Length: 232
Image (tube, rainbow, N blue to C red):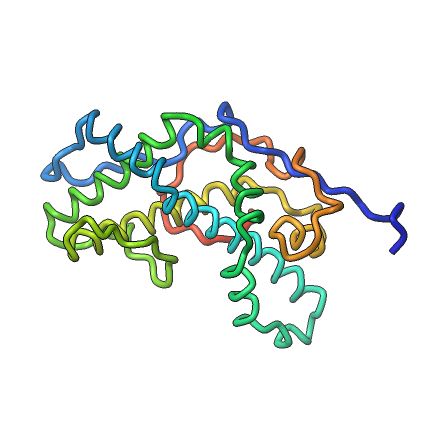
């Protein structure tokens, strides 16, 4: 394809001002103790410095973007949709280079710099861990079949580490789902999406408008969202 015919797609980073509330406060029953401000701040710092949670959010975002790409491919192939090898597609996302994840992270850099994001996220997680302990069963909104899992904290007991991993993974899923719901990929070709994911060369892709729609991001855990990368 001649160089002049390459359409230069741009990607707009999400601004902190667009994010009124990233993680919804859906308080557990009153019998579950509310985390203190100090607990929230300490846990938020743990999430921020650990990187495991953020990386899982970004992998979920990449998975959602890839789902949009697969729908485009199926539409293009029409009756030959079965030629798409889903195992191969999963491997592509699993093998995302660090540069691709770092490029996705830049889209959310302004939000990730705010204390509010990390403290709201920490509160969501701590509330559900407290609910789990108080009720003796997994919170309903943390039961997500097939969700990607965060690494288990080796400093915790086996059961506590497992519970934390479940809740962290659910929160990462909901956070990614909310971010994806504000992506506008309608003008992106399969090739453009592959460049964004790092599957193709990014020569024709820039990090500027208009990937994100002009809607406010308010909250995450209001239901059971599906990683689609595009709202209908």
